[in-house]
Amino acid sequence: MNIAGIHIEVVKKKIKNMHLYVKPPDGHVSVSAPETMSDAAIERFVRTKLSWIKRQTQSFDQQPRQSKREYVSGETLYLWGKQYFLLVEYGNKNDVDLRGDSVILTVRKGSAANQRGNVINEWYRKRLKEEITKILPKWEEKTGITATEWKVRYMTSRWGSCNVETGTIWLNLQLAKKTPECLEYIILHELVHLVEKNHNEAFLSLLDLHMPMWREIKAKLNSQTLDFME
Image (cartoon, rainbow, N blue to C red; front, side, top):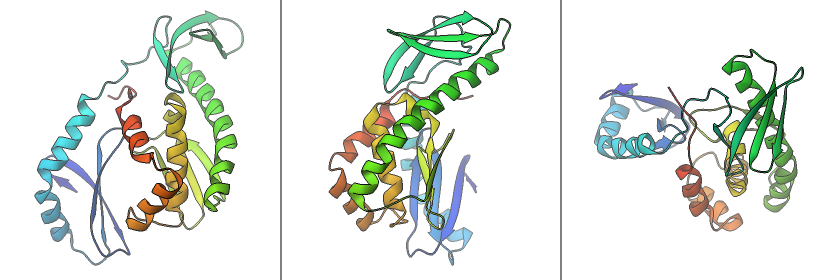
């Protein structure tokens, strides 16, 4: 649905009330609506919230982003919230290593920016998976909620998602760049969604129970430097 030049993702569910979200990391606008509600009624609802939506999306537009990555020496990269400087070296085998405050990227001479980016992203994927393997069991034990499986993928409109029917949770590859507590918050958030689909009082109560500081962590996550976007 497109309203006043804003693309709105509409998801109809078995719920009683409509819910409006402006989601990180790019200010993606989403509406959850009852299955029986007409598109016209949804549009009327959204139009009453246009001023709020514009304020929220502007905050994402103004949030600092990394410049477009060329993966050359001197660029900055982030791992667990810490800034590193990229140093490119050439060799016969692709590799990524940390030395002090530098990320050493070894690639074949003549490699393109997208090829170097793929090497870096696989390095992020490995580091993120290592942390999830350690952190997820802790939160499963603490909450009593277990995911049947988890996956990592690059997402532009949310930090995590889940499938209640299969018990699967997905975590955004970009979380490897954020401070560690942000990953813990998103893991908890998605686990709770496996038992509470909506952001209702029961959902918020579970977050409060298991992570009283989740609001501060969420705000910190959404204020950190974002990836470059066209």
